[in-house]
Amino acid sequence: MEIDQTKLSKILNDPKTREAAQQSGILIGRDGQLFLTGGGHHVAQYLTGERRASKSSVETFHANLSARNTTCEALGLPYAHVVFPDVMMTLAEWHDLDVESLYQRDYLIDPEAEAALRISYPLGVLQGRPDFHDKAESHYGAEGVVAVTRHFVGLFPDLLPDLPEVPIVSLSGPENNLVTTIDPTITEYRRDVSSAASGARLASNGVMAGENGKLWMALSPTALTEKTLLIFGDSFFLQMVSALSHVFRRIVFCRTPFFHTEMIESVAPDVLVTGNAERYLSDCKADNTRQHFLAVALARGLATTPSAGFSELWEEMISREGLLGAEGSPATIANR
View (cartoon, rainbow, N blue to C red):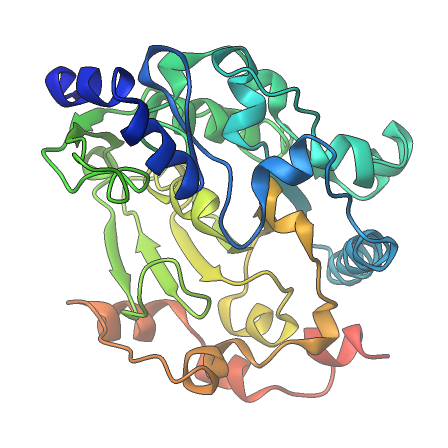
């Protein structure tokens, strides 16, 4: 990762710019590390304890996870849920706020309950590793993505081989997601995980980046296994698709905070996982309040512009009969 040091120096030494960044919900930490503190999820307020998760949100989270495990057990599907630690937690030594994990403080009942619900919170994988992060991102850098992917694959030791070494490529843009609100903006050249070595074909339904209802598919002819992975999660899991394509032959990623039983039969996964960024624990909604996944974009009035190759991958990877549903389908099992 490379960053424009001249602009960075100006920001670090200009009190007005630092104040403007703070008003935009961005904290400038040590060595020019930027942290998302505001936004709709009030990140810093939850991590410092100024805000606490509501009782209903905590209860909903655990009820969702319990029902998801029950459904997957009934279907014989290996399952796990990943809570992705916030960067303010993983790089806590690079800022002066007194932070505490929202997940560990408000949601973690006890280690046995965590294990029973198949929850993984890989804070130790990322903690104190600036080389695993980009300076101007609220997500992990390429090396961090690989580390978390390796941890994730290790959750299924009897099912999956170890993640091999995967190539990382340098990109000349676009700028990362925390820099556009700062003037002058920082140009940061990102490093990303390459899917080239797995020969993966990737395609999306074209829903806007960061929006629920986004669907990505990956088909990797040289993957280490023939297995299919179905993901219900957010951008932290989407970051991992290229690395995961080295292990899974087929990957279907659905951008959603919910568990969509209506998608399981149509994808026929060998492994099913869900996940969320730690900041999304600020307000958990019940799975039974969801839309059908394929109606999410329509219900929100979002345009879809499928990428090249999307229809071909859809035909290869999504079962029409499964989408129509039948007696004994996952949706039926979940609603008994």
